[in-house]
Image (tube, rainbow, N blue to C red; front, side, top):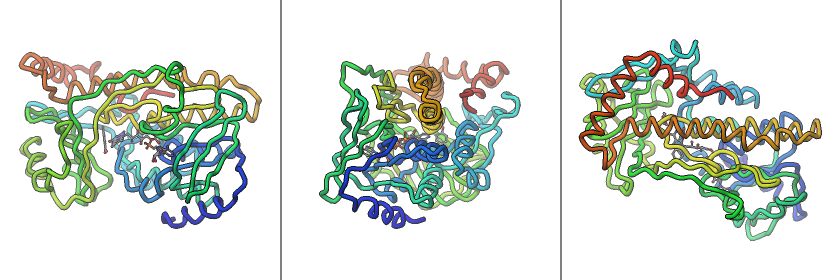
Length: 409
Ligand code: FAS
Ligand code: PHB
């Protein structure tokens, strides 16, 4: 369904001037918010999704590309996994490129048969949006001035303005699924939350283009000119990234300049095979590691990027968000079905145990594959020694593989 369809449903619901009441108010219609809403709906728990952007704007953001099995299993549980299975690409290996040579890491052999699925976050979001719209469930797009109230008590509320009209939703719980820049984490008193952060001195310049991928599997490259990643969305659509300066302006990168630089960071065989074309999307993403603790504040629960950020090197961001939502949906369903708060009380600790392992892996892989301003000659030799060890040692490769395919829930 196009964005218009979703807007149309939103308009119907928003004409009601009376305060709305729901069981779970979900702030944010990214993958976290929409997956949580769908899992709750399948268990008979009501929710309202509130999003500040338009549906089309959310779908226009090009983000993640690699899904762990845990994530695909959750999409199946939500009843929206069909397209991911039909159109997603099963990948059983990745390649590491360093010192001009590529080395394959056999993810499947090293993890007893596990794999990842290449299927864009945009498509995941589209599948979830369409399922929600088809069920006629309430999603309100284009809201302003969202504020959270009373989540330290028994009757939380979410307020927002739409088309100049103030609305209020009374609920049992609030799910803060509104990303790193959202209002939910910002609504928590500073004394009740602790943030851990590391900002990297570089960004990723990403290009999406309707050209066949340079290689059937992803290539992660550590080169003297910096990091590069060759990924894809399908057999005809590719996604490439180049490490760039943290303060670079994407406007200064022509398509030609991007393709020339990518070629310089590939091995001769890949460089020769590279098919270029006009960019469909081009953007620079900052890189940071971030965790907020705890992830629960009374009846407010943070999930996904609202609570943590990883550098995209390990392809963990979207997958961590899905895992949080897996834990939170089970806890909320347990609350309503069994009147038990056990899952809700354990939520933050359960998520953070897995989050910090993914933070470590993403930091390690980023530190190994990128050139830092202070890497220096010793740092280069250390990176090369670690990469040599990684591809020569089954134990080291297995450690990479089991983190890359995703740790169990
Ligand atoms: P999201 O940020 O996706 O969604 C939050 C939603 O809340 C947004 O739609 C936002 O508009 C809305 N919102 C914000 N404030 C609000 C408010 N006050 N009221 C209502 N709504 C509000 N991960 C990877 O694995 N690989 C990648 O290559 C990758 N690239 C990325 C590039 C960028 C630029 C960014 C920012 C992230 C990238 N990520 C990547 C991580 C990304 O995929 C996230 O992990 C994923 O989007 C998390 O989903 P959500 O938690 O739903 O957060
Ligand atoms: C992507 O395809 O966008 C992608 C894949 C793997 C990563 C990061 C991004 O590690």
